[in-house]
Structures are given as structure tokens and as C-alpha cells.
Amino acid sequence: MAKVKNNLFVRGLSDSQGTQLMVRQTRSGRAIVSASPTFDENRIFSEAQLEKFQAMSMNGRESRTDLLAMADFVHAPEISELDIENWSGAPGQIIRIKAVEHVRVERVNVVITHSTGTALEQGAATRAEGNWWTYTTTCTAPDQARVVVTARDLPWDIAEFHVES
Image 1: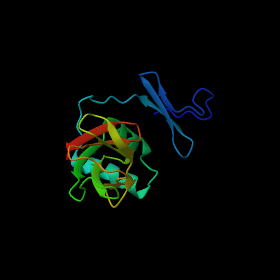
Image 2 (image 1 turned 180 degrees about the horizontal axis):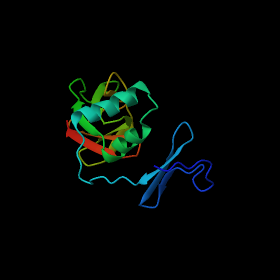
Image 3 (image 1 turned 180 degrees about the vertical axis):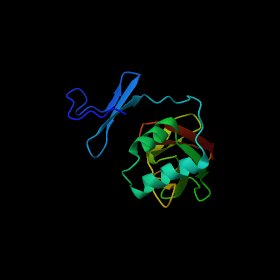
Image 4 (image 1 turned 120 degrees about the horizontal axis):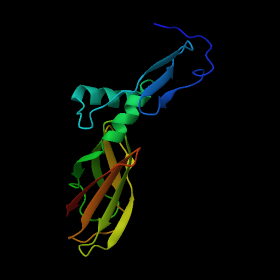
């Protein structure tokens, strides 16, 4: 293996150079040139990999940021549960939303509409415990109201879920 020291062409280079070469710098300052990696577009991450991505994100670890960004970009959030059991349509009641994502859900919004489609109220839910979010209603909703929830992650992938009351 050839070792090149203090080469003007690779000093300070990093990232991909086209689709064939990848250059990265080690912490010691050594430049490594290799073929660019290829990935199967239809690959599926194992549950263990996804849990590891989420755990690293929740713990605030800065290492493996490339993997976290990739996992966040590849997967949209999912609204796995919408709890309107304690909501009767009165103001001041809580609607609970369970939104999960392989890395992190950034924002959850709630829109309550009349059966005709007219918006009665809307707003952002607040993060609660774990993957749960809560939204406190502000107006009276009729019996035929519809609750529409959207969840977004950092790359702005969107998941939507709705239920008729």
C-alpha cells in the first residue's frame, strides 16, 4: 500500500468526488481514498438497526450522524395511535397522539374540522412522555367532527391520520 504524505491534491479533501471516488480524512490527518459505496435502493433495515438509530438520537450522541441522517431521510414518521377517548368535543380537553419515527418526530399538528370540511380549530401538539404528544382543544366541536393529525420529521417527511368522532 502506498503512503502519500503532504500531498497538495488530497490535503483537506473529503466527501465523494463524483460517483467513483470517496476521500475521507482520519482524525490523525491521513487521507483515505476508496471507491464510493453502493447501496441497494430497496434495502430494509432490521429492527435492531432502527432501534439503535433511535436510541442514539434520543441520547444526543453526535457519533454516527451520517447513519442517523440516512435513517431519518429514508423513513417517514408513523402515527400509530390517536386517543380521543377523553374528548367529547368540549374545549379544554386533551387529544393524545402516538407518533413514532426511526430517529425523531419533529412536529405534530392537529386540525379539527366540521363534517362539511370547514376547519374549526388547528394547532401544534406538545411533546409528552415517550412517543406521545398531547393537544388541548380550544373550541366546541359538533358531533360529526373530524380530527386530522399530521406528524413531521426533520427532513419534513409527513404522515397523516384522521378519525371521525
